[in-house]
Image 1 (cartoon, rainbow, N blue to C red):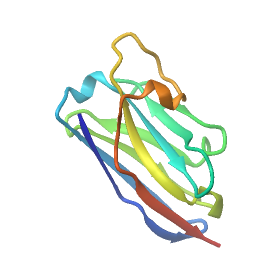
Image 2: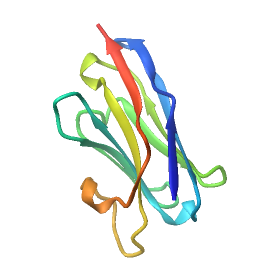
Image 3: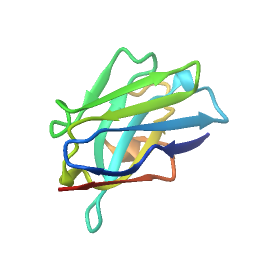
Image 4: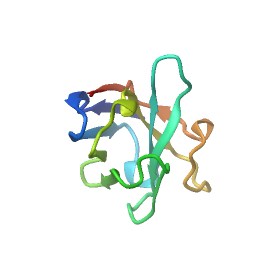
Length: 125
């Protein structure tokens, strides 16, 4: 499974970005997908996750009112719509795939099996 994240960039506070993560080499519709981020000098943190058919989502509290995770299984792609961006959202954003048949949506990075290369998001005040 290969994951390719894109859509990062530089925006001013209050702006929006949509990240995309395209998957290849596997059966995308069977994977739970997640987004994580890592700012300089910090540990990677969970942002959002989505179930196989997109009906179930899970977002960390700090972004729940501003970010939306979605997926298009026909396009093998998961998205992270980020609105009202703040400087504290500045980080490298990673997508990840959990291929465990028996798993559940999780914020634990150790439960994810495949990772994309990351895309930089920079928010200026």
